[in-house]
Length: 255
View 1 (cartoon, rainbow, N blue to C red):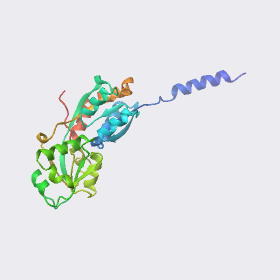
View 2: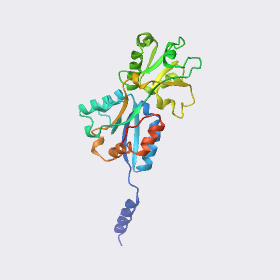
View 3: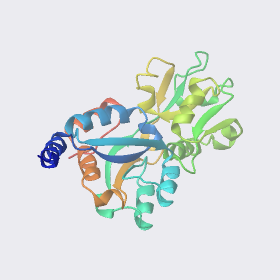
View 4: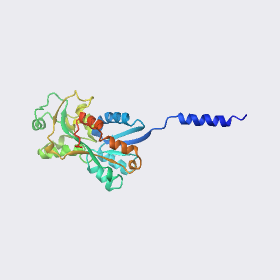
C-alpha cells in the first residue's frame, strides 16, 4: 500500500494545529514616550495578543525624515501635530487617521542638590548652573518648548552659551542623569518613570510659557493598508491606554 495519502492527511492536520503567525507592526514614537511605551504595549498585548509590536524611538523630526525616506513604519506617535501634518502633506500618512491622543508637560530637572530650585527664575539665575540641557529645538518638540520658555523669560541670550543640546529628549535626560548637565528641560514622563522617579528634583513649567505639547498619532500610508495598525490606533483611545498615559504624567483629551 502506498503511504503517501496518509502522510498528506497527517501533514494537513499538523498545519491546521500550528499557531498562526502574529501580525507585526512597527510603531515609531517620540523619545518622550520611551518609558510609557513599555506599559502601553503591555496593555495592548493583553487586548490584542495576535499582534506583535516593534518600537522605534527618537526625535519627532528624525522619525519624520525616516518615514519620508521609506522606513518600514506603520504608526507614527509624534510629540507634536506639526510633523504628522507635514507627513500627510508629503503623501506619507493617512489624513483621516490623525488624532491628538495625549498632551505632554515640560519640567526643569536636576540631580544637583546644591542648586536653588525653589522657583523657575531662581533656578535659571543660579550661578552654579553652568550647563543647561535642552533637546534640539529644530527636531524635538520638547526642545522647541524649552526654547520658547527661555525666550518668554528673556533668558535665551544669557543662557545660550551654557546650553547642552541633546539629539532628543531622552539624550537630554541622560545629560542630566550622568552629570554632564547641571539641569535640563525634560518631559514630566521621564522624571515620573521607575528609573528616575527617586532621582533629583524638578519644577513643572507653566503651560502658558510655551505652545501646547499636543502629541499626534497617525498611520503611515504603509500602516493604513492593514488592520493591525488601525487596531493599535484605536487602542490609544481605550480606557486602558488613557490610564497608562495619565499615570506617566500625560494629559488625555476629553472623549
